[in-house]
Image (cartoon, rainbow, N blue to C red; front, side):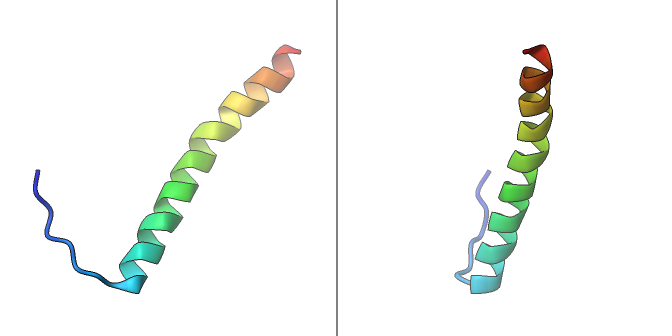
Length: 38
């Protein structure tokens, strides 16, 4: 898949926000499950 990329600061911020949100949503259940396991 080739995606046409344009250098826009707003796009970078939006992508970073989505990535951070995704990582937080994925990491939270893992951390909570590990804490509950102990």
